[in-house]
Image (cartoon, rainbow, N blue to C red; front, side, top):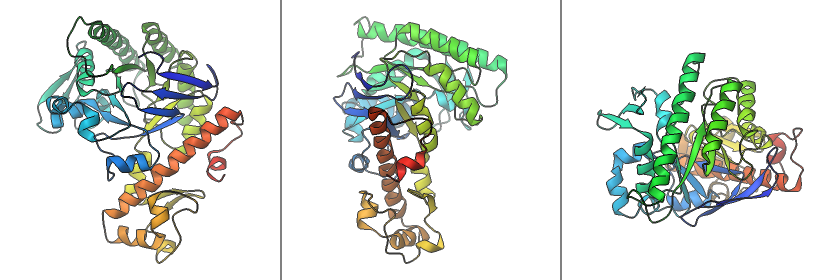
Length: 379
């Protein structure tokens, strides 16, 4: 389904606004923020509640889903959309990011990545081909290829090896995917899952460019920018980001993986990014922090106790229209699960409103480096 991304404003460089029409029929506008549903759930929210926040697309973890509930279970009910009961779009990561997560005992070879299942303790081999297969069996809209994400800090030799794995695995992924879509292999789902590549290279500008150029030559439907926002300094992160976006094709979506702080999103949109994902808003909500026009606030702070005010005036989320600060403070003080749920509804609604303001500014041409994230929050 080439042409699933339409650029409505902007070009190869600078702020962009566009639209996605995904294979399942789901539609979304960019700049786009995707809540994270690692275990096929945005924590504390029902599928309908995800939509109430203005979120049109979520990202899941294909590797973990293939283990629990298992690809056979997901496929037996018609795919991940049916299994989750979610009417929006679904992206799926490969599981490659687990390479730098503790507990998975990950090892990389020319074949792929070996990981320890968090459920059974057994070793599981992820190959570029098996990852493509599980995305298609799961019936997701967009599947990310298997890439190699080096931890931070990593030596130059380790980053060179990472880029080599990433390019080689992307080539194998694309060849396998093309064979499936040409009908040479079986397993095509009800709709054509799109395949996005992921650039790597750490903070090395030369390696970022080498990896990006190689992946662009393979002609993927979209491009993720990975291996950043994992501990490196902000300036190094944005230099590496620009090295990738400057080489990516104008007509394909650019997806900066794992970035969710408003200041970072704003700066990334200025650099030409279209899509984001992060646990930042939902994790903060569960840890009693909410976003407001004045900045982040601690729900258990003394000024919240007994307050009849909403979290934020003018916010349309269920927490602000139906509950007071005092009530939500009480819920967190007593460990009632409704507290994190209401805070999550608010934080996601807040971030989606922020994305819409970014889009409006990108379209009217008023988004420039002098704008601060807080300026968009107080409009």
